[in-house]
Image 1 (cartoon, rainbow, N blue to C red):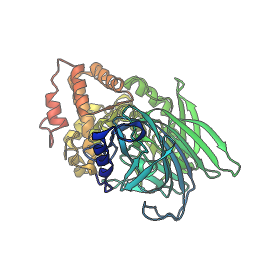
Image 2: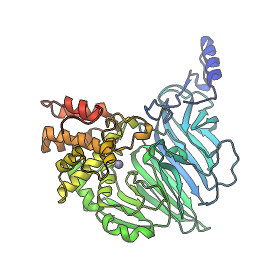
Image 3: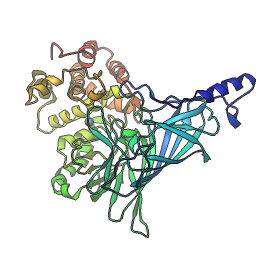
Image 4: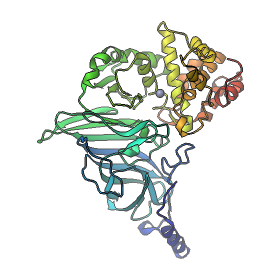
Length: 485
Ligand SMILES: [Zn+2]
């Protein structure tokens, strides 16, 4: 937490006034400031206290630009490639005299709370809002932020890039773990999920793709096009996306009638066609194994972004940095259950995303004439799975449930060793009970958040006669390579 603008004067004056009479403006409620973070073990400033967001309405206009440098809150902007209005509906979880949103870069031009002008200050990623009167606990309120500028690309502790990523013909917004704050003001932590309306206007000839369903597409007099997308199920900020550029669009449906919408960079269309055509088949297989699909559409975004070589499970419409292979497609679609619908409470619980999605790849291979999950597990344990010895050794570098730092939340212990934890559970309970656990877990926390302790308690509850203590101790929380496979 690095807030340098003190809120003390407001609170002190209020505390004094409280001695004499009620305080906090017209409401007569005494309030305190919401915290500037939610104490995430790896990203302590991410998210904010004092409220719970229920809906983001983002109205954006973007004009790609190749020569701009990012604005900072302190330097005047010379151009406005992105202009935005974010209307954030939230419920106060305490009496709020002030509260923070997360926003990196950009300029805030005006801000209102329930239609009334509010003051704000900015320090690093914290946009601190002072409403004209204290917001009482339990009240639903709307913050509207008008902002503009050149959005920042954010570099993670592990060196990967996220936030707003310009491409040759547009831009991509990718948010894991803290990139959402690079393009909209947010309670940017996975623990606060909300529904979204995203409306974006782009220059003539460009397309814009986001999460959920496309509601309208309208062309204005000057040839610009406005795309209006809606995500009707709760979504974590890091899973929000927008992709702007030239795309080949395909629309189809699964056998169950679920809409499939894919957007592919034309240069990747030929290489992507065959694998993306498997989406309906993969979705049916995943529904069979993981239970009912939690959202109301699916698809993919394929775009090229120089060095951003990672795929991301952006909700309903995973992103791929080039034509995906089948395993990666299976992985990102499996995240829709594990990560997107059941979302980690903190970034320490990341293995609950990646262990499941990696194990989905193993299960797919097992069901489609590839190695069995047992063979994959054995190869990892013996060190023959990876060509490179350092990769083989890396999976034992820390326990999946305890990454050593924020720079390591996407390392192989979280993925491969996380999947090995699931395989150990499967060995212990057998296939029938294992799939009950996998499906039951997705159902029990559908659209919600869960952590590692919730998971281990759930597994134990589902298999009361079994002893998992060795698995938790050696495989989930234990340092180094377990003595026995
Ligand atoms: Zn993943």
